[in-house]
Image (cartoon, rainbow, N blue to C red):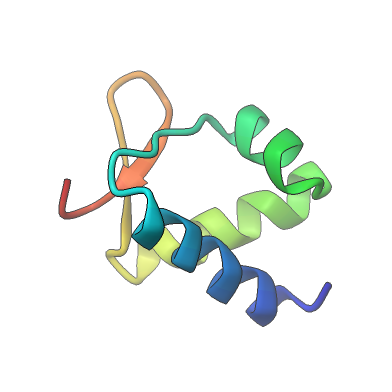
Length: 64
């Protein structure tokens, strides 16, 4: 899938589930993506201040 489509899709999933917290490994499995592509999506959403890293190494919505 195109990277921008995945960014949109994953953003929507975090919107639907506000308490969602995933490690990069969990996200890779959940969305069936390669690690590098998944990390690119996560990095874009973190850079956009939509997601943030937790102390345990997971990502969650920045407003949660």
